[in-house]
Image (cartoon, rainbow, N blue to C red):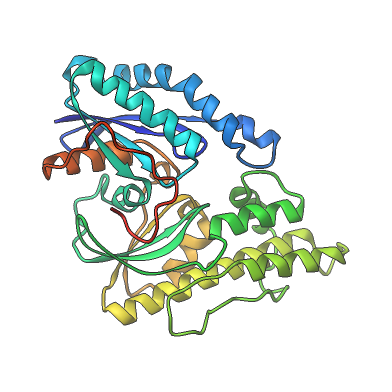
Length: 331
């Protein structure tokens, strides 16, 4: 089975081809134009998707060394994400499916991030836990089997990735904020500034990062860089506060569920300090990190999950809509 995957939920235009569980191509067009604005501009993202999609689809098919006529089905993200961006990708995918006379299946972006852990891996057994941590979401899931997921807890307000982006803006760093803070923090003392860690000692799985962001804002109002405390120290302390909360809830989830296999998904999974902290604090668990190229938004996870859906007999009628605001499920 050969599936074409299309992902346009935010500011990455991505197209992939998957054949029998193997990724033949994974093309990602990063919209660097947003760095000029310090964040993603929805209208600009939509226009960039429209400009890039056709060329990237041709490139993905050529890179896979297949003909467009052998594609069996199309998988496309229909949410969550930016409404205009999703609509651009879904409209393109529907038109292509009609033109080729093939089936289409809509894909939940969050589920695809979770299932991305299965790419290039054949040693993951169910059940397993998944920390889904990105710019828009911070959630802990229990993955019982394909299509059977339980949400254990999530953030009350800002996502971890959002906290990184907003924190970077407060610190005067660039966009995207996560990599910029990580770069700055590697030269700092993470114990120097005592930032709050919401719910870190509670017995419930929930996160909150808005108070941490506010604490950083107040701290920087009177901050004067000295030899005793540099911007690197502040960045390291702020990053540590975010990651300590994530790791604490992962440890709690293993205790509550007795599941000892843990996977990480989403863009923040690329953070080296997060990976090191998880390895250190959960050394007795089976930790699964996705390949770096599958952490941020990509279409490989869409085409791969799409193939799984088709194999389960699932397909979507052409009149399906976008769902920018999926709630606490992966339907």
